[in-house]
Image 1 (cartoon, rainbow, N blue to C red):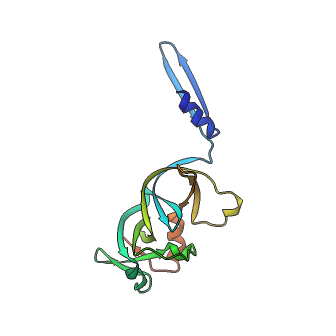
Image 2: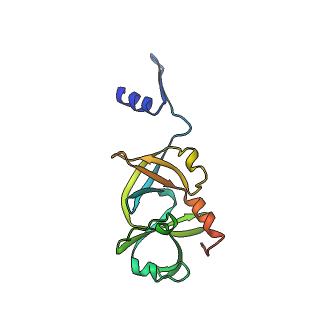
Image 3: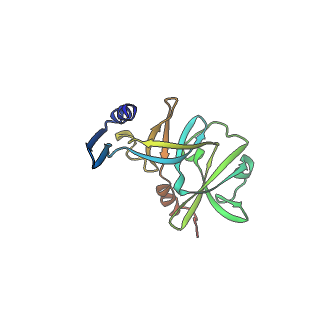
Length: 175
């Protein structure tokens, strides 16, 4: 219990324990509102890590860089259907050379879905979401950040805002 209390204190939270003999014990954990924990898919573009919430992911695909470059009007045929996609490498102005094989993560919001191109899927990750502060408040497609085990920062993508932002300018498939 001491380890749990120290971890919660490190997050600037509190632990209250009330025990009444013969009646039971109540354990209350209070965390700051700025913190939340999400289950996500940890992905990588170049040397930068991002987290995509698991609840919005529909399916993942592996395609060649050539297939992405040859796509007309940002549409790819995946599972026999034309699917819109956003090349996140381009959106984040990453000028490094992309790998020959890339991943497309299909995300869904309401009745719309879109593919997000990334370099690699690292794996499932449970992230403590932290606010970004004033410098990033105008970047709506990033909802927060998480500190990874090695001390690096992973940015959390707000896929609902990504879909909303691009649904006005590109064709989004509705289901």
